[in-house]
Length: 212
Image (tube, rainbow, N blue to C red; front, side):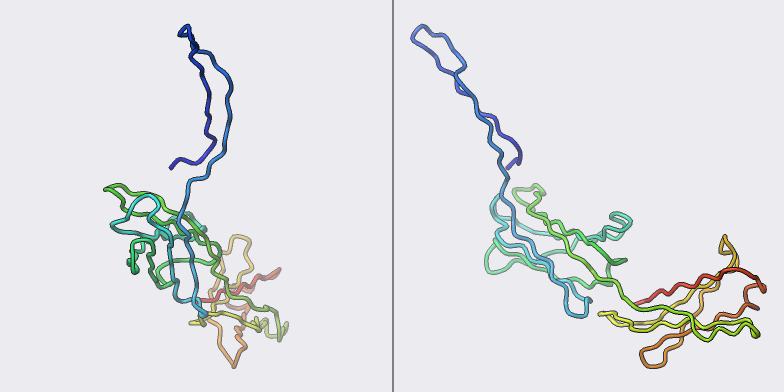
């Protein structure tokens, strides 16, 4: 089951016993693979994995779905064990997305134990959408030396545990403070005080991080 370009030649042995090359042909061949699907629940907390047509290389004794986020490589890879369906051609599994780290593109490979060997059966990818929101500075008070960072229109399918708003002025972030935002309805705010940053003058930077 090797994918790639196959080469076929034709040789003729004539009546005198001589072998002569006649012609050749090349053909690109893709090896069969299982149909692998990865489906996130509406709240993006549960991932359902499914492999159909998994017996093309022989009946698997067991199947796994190694899954990992593209960010930082395979540092969060989880080998999710699958359960066999009505027959050995279909295998399924589910896993909590809390088992992984990060958002963005995820990779799913499917391996089967066939005849004592681990065989790649198929692959797929899916995307875990990050939270989105609108960040702005409100209530700037130069006399008091403070400003308020405001986050609105927060969309996070898996919910919000808390929101951090790190702020700093020093170019090397020596004065960074990870402020814990307060919620009022769907609006999250944090007040940055210059006094807590050594009364530095200049450009202040404020970011917002959502812990879902």
